[in-house]
Image 1 (cartoon, rainbow, N blue to C red):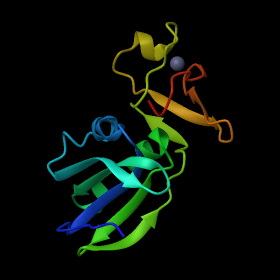
Image 2: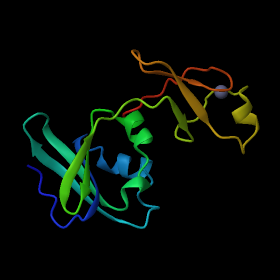
Image 3: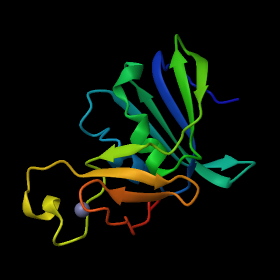
Image 4: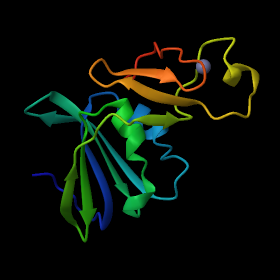
Length: 145
Ligand SMILES: [Zn+2]
């Protein structure tokens, strides 16, 4: 069982691939949030060998789980209230992601109009394919990088 320690309200993100905690920290913009974050690197895991864990103390509606689902939907999200795990959330690939990845098509309107939101739509859930909302260019980058 995970020791959630003094976490009153927030999240424990478990089963993060070892070495990926800092990427997720940045992608979730935890550096911009005014909350307490603990990163545990290379924790032992029966399932994975080693894993990273992030603990975030913040009001639970503050975290964008869609982005997390996009980065790696194998991460386990434990929601903590009053120092207890009240819910384990199963992450899914989000239907739409905004301003996380950029369209690489030089003729895309988002390449020309800088102020436009970068919106990608999940076009094939099985193959995990995202396409630009504006030009339908396929996103070829790796998600879990
Ligand atoms: Zn595009």
